[in-house]
Length: 107
Image 1 (cartoon, rainbow, N blue to C red):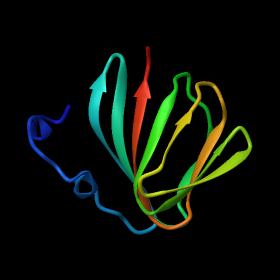
Image 2 (cartoon, rainbow, N blue to C red):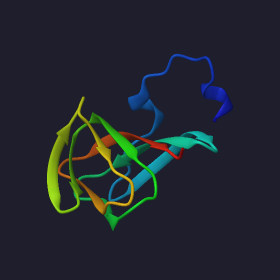
Image 3 (cartoon, one colour):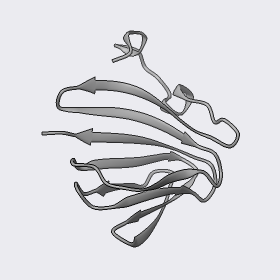
Image 4 (cartoon, rainbow, N blue to C red):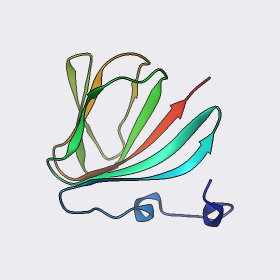
């Protein structure tokens, strides 16, 4: 965990800035049992289809995203969340620029 974030009230949207034409991320917590990472996607950017061996929860905190899980497209916007099941293919695309928190639980 980033030491400067411990025991401090933070507006999560302020943890990471958008960058033109890019996907940027910042890991907030890293433990053996899982991670918490914030991402910022510029409009039109995304992550191609892949899978992970663990369940992962996405919480959209700004903007709009399209998340495809096993071929089914889901539209998410600020305040929405979805769980991406372990070992199922998923992809993420920024309908408009968006920020999300990814929580991955490994055990």
